[in-house]
Amino acid sequence: MIAVLLRRLAELLLVLLALSVLVFLLTSLAPGDPAEEILRRGGGQPTAAAVAALRAELGLDEPLFSRYLRWVLDVLGGDLGRSYVDRSPVAAEIAARLPATLLLAVAAAAVSAGLALLVALPAVVRPRALDSRILALVTVAAGGVPPYIVGILLISVVAVGLRLLPTGGPDSVVLPALTLGLAGAATLLRLLRADLARALRRPFVRLAAAKGLRRRRTIVVHALRVAAPNAVTAMSLVVAELLAGAVVVETLFAWPGVGQLAVAAIRQRDVPVVQAYVLVVAVATVLLLAVTELCLSALDPRLRGGER
Image (tube, rainbow, N blue to C red; front, top):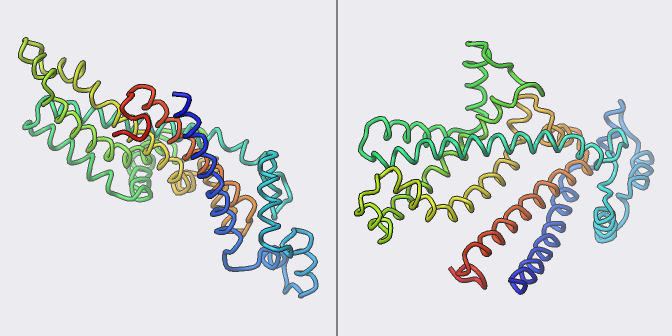
């Protein structure tokens, strides 16, 4: 197990290094000059001297590798830079908004897992029942609709039409969690239903059924345990997708998370904030998948050392 941990740690460090290079290049080489954009927001046409002075102040006149090295060293020291707009520390802004994004992701993951189980179990217990098929079809169809369309429909029907919940803001997480969770529920449902169906064909599960164990109990006690590892892996991928997809939903529902901050930073060409957002989400995703893989390796020795 120690060898597995060391190998996974080395792989993780390489992935994070490559990730930092990718994030820096994608944000630094984007079209446009941040210094010129900042001066334009102040009104008037910026002069070449003013642009050059601001580029020197922001360190944008340095070679690309020097800027990357300085940025990486600052990040390792906990400094994500300062906003180009108000010169405030980016790390403090991210830290202030990150709990809201994590709350939304956890709530959406709970919605995804709950709906997937709620639909998959009846679909396996009564596969030919009309209500099970309709419920599964509706869930998969809803998961195929883009989140912003689902969000607009929920706002129109639940918030505006029925006036059951507020349209957005920090007081309600229900509608944004439903919007994000539906897409994840469709992914989990397809996987869980297929895994449960395969698990029911396993010899020991058939033996339990042959001994008189009820089908519902056979599924919950035996088949669900067999399907759990794949479900855990899929759930980690869903959570990673939820973190990345929170940008649209947070903007739509005025949810005060890092996604809303990132959208504002993109509009204002605030490169340090965009870099910090992409880096935080990417690192969180990589760490989540790494922890999931280690947990599965600990639970199933066949997964260690690359075995499948």
